[in-house]
Image 1 (cartoon, helix red, strand yellow):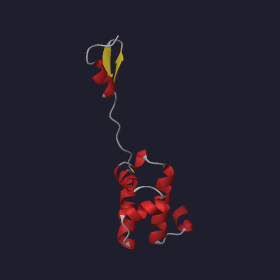
Image 2 (spheres, one colour; image 1 turned 180 degrees about the vertical axis):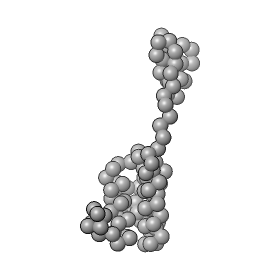
Image 3 (cartoon, rainbow, N blue to C red; image 1 turned 90 degrees about the horizontal axis):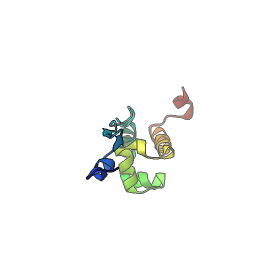
Image 4 (spheres, rainbow, N blue to C red; image 1 turned 135 degrees about the vertical axis):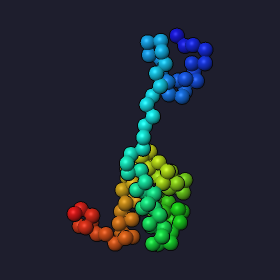
Length: 100
């Protein structure tokens, strides 16, 4: 049975368990969350590219590049790997060096 204003609690991440509302634990970002942002900044500094150029290379919109910088854990792993590949090519790291 839903109580008055219980829809607000459901929308904000609370669930009714045994007549009491239990809120969800706040998730922390992964330890590597800032790496893609650093990679993008490194590419921009070395190549003189903009977010638009990086978006064109990745085949996504500029907004997606901004989201990759802000919340990379919510983006496709394929995009993160493409970005890492571009960064390694820009810096001059070969595949053999990155595997070592």
